[in-house]
Image (cartoon, rainbow over all chains, first blue to last red; front, side, top):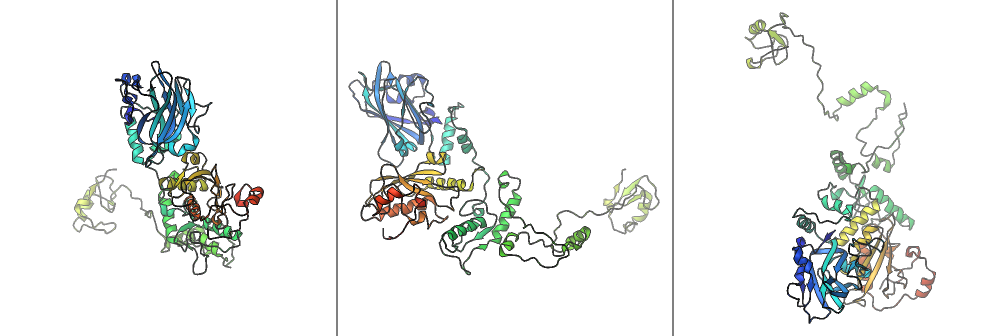
Length: 418
Length: 154
């Protein structure tokens, strides 16, 4: 929540009434504390009503407006507030009050009450914004303070504070600009009672989100079993079942919720296998993110595997859809194979993709010359065989390892250190 | 967004789109809707050039946890309830998409548009013929009423 009349937020003020010299309306938004403390006093011949307009940096949602109506011994006793939304030409009255205290606080009754008033250090009288005028004060770009009555004095205003939040209709860049302006001098002028949820929403600009086409067109949830409707929209199977169930309650046949056309054999929802694969792949790649934890997944249907029975299990259509993702791994061979056999069979099949290197069994090589068994002054060949200097020199002529008959070049021979 | 139920997530999304690009003459009370996402108040203006030009109406939307598979409860509230052959003086609206013909593909925006167009096509300002009887006997919830949609012309 900000005070939008803070000079950092670049408000402008205007009035048609002439002011006493040194007490112009500009004082109300002056960055200079001495000037600001002087306030606004109209010229002696001016009589109410006097309008003072404040134009704000952006449309705001009003929380409260605190007005000090006393300058020296001058005091006004009745004030009306008006607000103007962007794109509107006229001001709408949002509050009016006659009061006896030195000032008045008009607050939004949605956020404040008698028991929960806004910060009010000088005991100003409490007034409320007209709740039926909410359209004007949740999106107010200009505020007009109208002085309606004074107490044996000229119209004046000691100070005005307009507290509120940036309107929800503002673009993100506007919000950023305002935040930037308010923090420009390193002084955070944010009120203590600003709700924490607002801070959370504002700062988290970069947020992980799923692509829109992974979301159900009806519920906006990530789909587990995407079904494409005849109308081209894709919804989750659970949503589709709910729709069809609701239609059945009215004694109607299932229909496309987007067009209302009943499903027929030629025109019915189909499982979108391509999308299903993309969703699963995306979930797999982002499985470290917290957001994916709660997303529904498909699993194979729990079925009892009967030993020695070769009778194929009858599958219903629903069954087939639900386990379509698990169909790729079939266990048609049944449990007759032992585990090792099954693994061997699986690894040899052409559908099997290996993600790790096969561990080659490397025979243990003793740290000695392969020919004369001498353990000192050894050289190693690329094939890991060791030779002493003498044996190596005798075998360099053909450059072939005497042990395994693989060729090597001179530069690949390294001194071997135990 | 993590702790939202499916109906709340969808409503949140609809609220955003209604705020960003509202249909003409329709304003949603964002603060109230954010306090309770299951109950919205929508301010509606009579379209210029129709019988309701210059009038202001308030619509109340109540959503159940089953939304969007269950239709919202939509009534006119406040001081000004439009005088229309399909709107009873207690604010209940006789509109088929609010009960039987509801489809989850409809949204708050489309319901608002339907109501605006229903009002706009009115030729004569009068209450439904059975208004007095209905208002005395009806359930508080318009969805409990067995409506007879006998007239498509208005």
